[in-house]
Image (cartoon, helix red, strand yellow):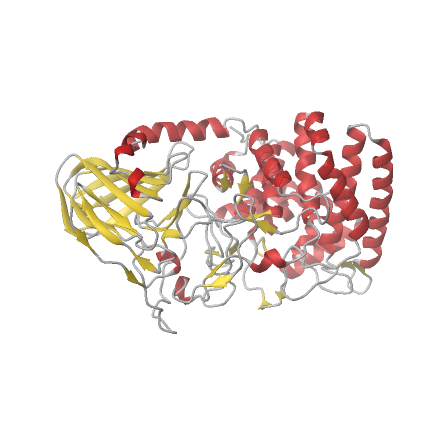
Amino acid sequence: MSKAGLNTVKKTHSLKPDCANGKPVDHAFLSNGYGSALVERDLTISWLELPRFDSPPIFCSIIDELSDSSFRVKFREGAAFNRTYDDGSLTLRTRVVTKNGEAVFVDLMPQAEPAFMRIVKSNVEFDIILRPTFNYGLIKPSFYEQNSGGTFIDPTNGQAFELKIKWSSGVKAIEWGRWRLEPGQGYMLMLYTSDIRHGLFSRKSGVYSIPTEALPSTREFWSSTISGVKITPPRWAKRHFVTSVMVSIGLMYRPSGAFVAAPTTSLPEVVGDTRNWDYRYAWIRDTSVAAEALISIGLVTVGRNALNFLLSVLDPSRKPFNHTLYSVDGGPPPAERELGWLSGYMCSRPVRIGNAAHMQIQLDLEGEFLGALKAYYAATKDKEYILRSWWAVAAIARFAYQNYTRPDAGIWEERGRAAHYTHSKVMMWSALNTAAWLAKEVNRPLDADRWSARASEIKGYILKNAWSDKSQSFTRSFGSEDVDASLLVMPLYGFIDPNDEMFKLTLKRIEDELVVDHLVFRYKKDFLGSAKYPFGLASSWVARVKLMMGLKDEAELYIKKLISCSNDLGLLGEHIDPYTCEPHGNYPQLYTHVGLLQAVAELSSAWPPKDQL
């Protein structure tokens, strides 16, 4: 066993690195419910976070293009790549064609193991180059060559990343972390371990699955998980609907039931700008909406797991959700900080970890949670679950009852500015209205009457203060003349009839001022300046409202636009360039995919199309 590549600390990049010509985000997404990976079209793994979503990544070249923190495949000649998700699962099949032959790669992340696996059959020679790093690229590992593989160790704490190659023909070590594989077939197994004493080359190595065993079990997991879906989407939307379901489930941290907003940090909303945030945490809002959506399409068990997580972090004595976001295990979120040694995606700095939004007060969260709880009860009539959770329902009702006049940071998480946001007020109304509805269902008439009366007061308060006679619309916040996309949820949560004249005028303003080719900006500007790209989720909100209004054809235009802007695998980011369809912001985005599956499900349920399968 030889040793090479002695550990070094990565130097801070220059202030103006030459990295502005990076590739657009067009990656495949893989997950095992613990961590995840992003795989480029050419099979480069440029993001791999193990052992969990919010861990420092093993590969991070997507946010540091001057580094080589990745796993790459190199062919001797030019190659064409064609990829697809395999058999309705988050396993990726890529066919590579060169002038001298072809190869097929199947990538997967096995269940409950901090591992990435690649199965290959090739009649051409190729190299693999493995360059893991630790602590967000700051630590270059020590390397120990093994028999057909190697061990990369973090010298600061002993954690390791290991590669084992099983190949039918010759494997030649070219240099540290680089191997040449002759035509043949086999696999590469990569495993993160906190201690090499129970790693791939230890006495315990036999407990880990091999890729040829893990592939069928992974496919079976996905088949079993999505078999409960009760929606039959139209033919033109089926593949994207299924992908959105898989992405949503893939963004759940399975040990706790929490959903992360996205698997990445600091993929910028605007390239070269500072709108770079860490989304690898469990937002209460996102987890609630994802739970509601998955329950509504039949995945009740998945949704209930998310509800259990939300109940586990709910404080009945003060504001029910103290934080807007939590670590994936339910712990308090880490402080936001900047990593100055990383160049950022296409020079977009700073790269941030942690998210300071957890310092904010956001008053809509409890309403989204009760919306998910209501969806669960509507689907199951499980009174026992509601009664065992009544302490939480009562705490939320009590908080909304007493605090609906407070300002907050709102759904868009404005930093340094609190206001009376209409969306937040509507969701506080929804919290009390839903609590009253649940009280009736479990025979608590006194609670139902009291909460319903207060909900009526709040509704009057909103109608009085959120409407502008000057603008002839509801406004983003009290006293403002602006509209924003969050006003679209007013009918979705039952606050107002979508055909009410006041809402129709509001919708017209939104479409006149915020819509470009059926893509919807969330607002015109915020504390950082003008919004540059539409917000993916907002298109699905418009589609769902149009469906409620009976405008099926118009709703389809918004859904089809979202679908047309996804990549070849059906993946979407947070923001979308209306002219090129390139994704911006963290990717893939839970909220965007949840919105798409909700819109498709409601389209399918309300008006079953003739072209359904």
